[in-house]
Image 1 (cartoon, rainbow, N blue to C red):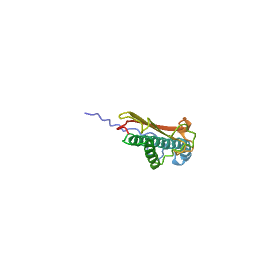
Image 2 (cartoon, rainbow, N blue to C red; image 1 turned 90 degrees about the vertical axis):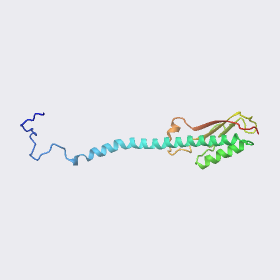
Image 3 (spheres, rainbow, N blue to C red; image 1 turned 45 degrees about the horizontal axis):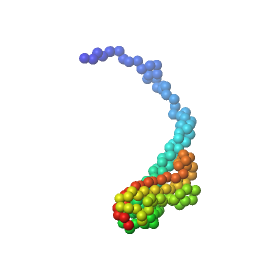
Image 4 (tube, rainbow, N blue to C red; image 1 turned 30 degrees about the vertical axis):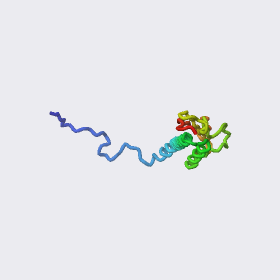
Length: 164
């Protein structure tokens, strides 16, 4: 059993007098503006960083898909490097990836080794696809370029199915 006290709890000096010990709501407007001013830059940086990260992931995935499709074309019978390169360029164009060499990238955008025309049966073939980050990102001041990622690369290795 519980023991109940017959004594009533004291509610303090303001109990029942109608007075409240809270600050009025009209004095909080300055605080809300200050909090907004402090948090807005943080929210904008997080928002921009999220967009930048999603763009980089999309670009990397696009390059990987293009390299896979190019390798798939290169390992078939009677395939040429031109066929594989054309397939890669078609995939990149469909996904809106700018792959032209306007940013000072060194080396080819598409690299296939060994050549599809000379590879033996079951010889591993490597397809490398590169694209600059400069024309493929949303923000004018890209975090990727700040971190020295001037280009992204995808590499796929498949075995040649049949010798040409």
